[in-house]
Image 1 (cartoon, rainbow, N blue to C red):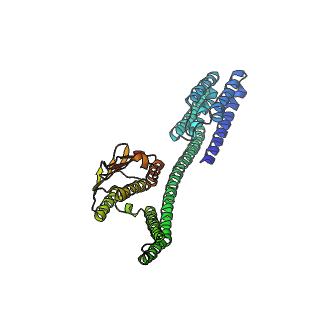
Image 2: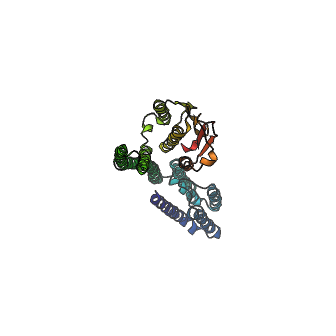
Image 3: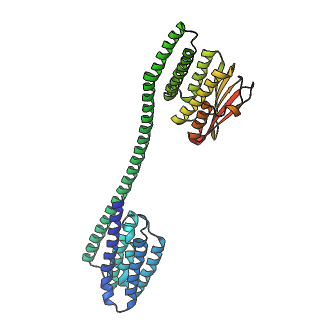
Length: 375
């Protein structure tokens, strides 16, 4: 497109210069005044100011150029009617891109030339009519050709822009797919190595503890192995957000509450408010991880009887609320806990925030909020 634009400008300049020289050479040789020479030079300089120095967009003719060129042409025509064709040269820039205006310029030039011949000789011969018609047809063909090339170039540029946008979207999708595939690979590797290894260690330590139940070091080793086994399983679970594959985040929260209810007897349920809107996969995954961490904390520490997961689609916010009626705790002392820190980091990475409200004996509420633009 840029190459065509440079070529178009060069052809336009050459066309204007050649037309101006050829049409003004004859009349200038017949007059002795300086004024016509100055007006022709002024017309060339005026064109250079608006089309060479400034380089307007394709198809755009600055109104000041038309006004100034028209005044210069009126001066030439006042000096001698033979300068009519020179006056019409101000329409040359139009002929390169605008089909209608280009055809008007061709017809005007042909008509002006015939009028000039009739004004000089009092009659118009068939030969003059034929020559003028052939020249007009050739000029109209040239105008149509340049217009077609310019239109095709613009269409190609539009197609190129659409192709680039499609390629960028495909590259982004491939990057997301690559990240998901890598997370799946890491989950498989951890499960097949560390998780299985910890499970084997736990089994061996349990067998050894049956023979040496009073061994304090054996008991500590078994507890550490169990904790690391649970942690490795949590990491694998975090790397593989399969819960989002079916039904998205709302359905994943319902399954999470149902699993908690089935496994612990806690009266857990999920609530959806507002009109659901599409969310980016990363946003859904991070909100789900926050919900899982909050549920896990309530399950391990809160001794709750009731837990509610609420996902709210507001006008400018996406809010996840996890509330339990358990023992509660002092957020000031637990704010540096690893689980809370991870949840805060997850929300901060997406431009959101995490709020923890709790007090001893009054339950706990974890509120994760994201701006609606995060979707």
